[in-house]
Image (cartoon, rainbow, N blue to C red):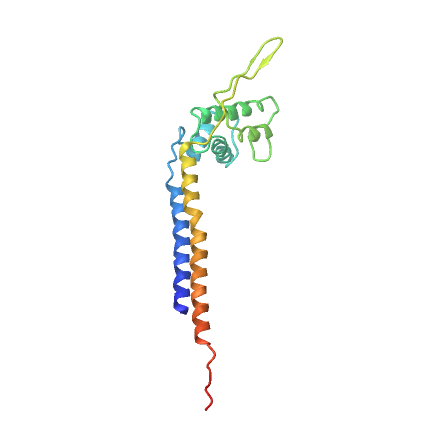
Amino acid sequence: MNSKLVSELLKGIVLTLGLVLLLFAMAVLAPQARADSLNVSQVAHYLDQWTALPLAPHVDRLLATNLLDAQELAWGSQWQEGSLLASENAVLKAITLYVWPGGPTMITVGGEELVWVQSNIAIDTTLSVGFSADSLNFGSQPVVTPEPDVLLLLLIALVVALPVPMLIRSGLRRSMANVMRARLASYRPRVQVRS
């Protein structure tokens, strides 16, 4: 009877591992269509090429990483078209703010705070700002909703994940009950007949 408990435990472990592998495969194989599919090296090269001040070693890669991370945080896997280019140009514009006689000669990691702040912002190209003598109009911003494929993946994960712990628990309870019945049956009191 002890082997039944072990087999039920192994079934539960296999089900759990199967669930984990399924969720991992869903996360890895989910479509990641991007409007901008540039990597850190390409963004760093663009910044190096168009900067008004030279960049210290590794600064280009750090700025590029910040820009790509900001895009990912703002838009997820479906980047807004043109946002990365606008964000890169905003960083280059922030660098030009430090060009003056006697100003910094190089963009460094510890200095030029405005450049670093700007590198963490994803520019929304759909927004507009207008102003007149008596008003300031920021336009309208559309409501951002999750993509349908993300909602579908979450729904599938919930449908798959919810029954597994219940199956494991019920299987363990049944096997434990069978083990206890067998043990109780083996310990029945033996009635001795006196003659």
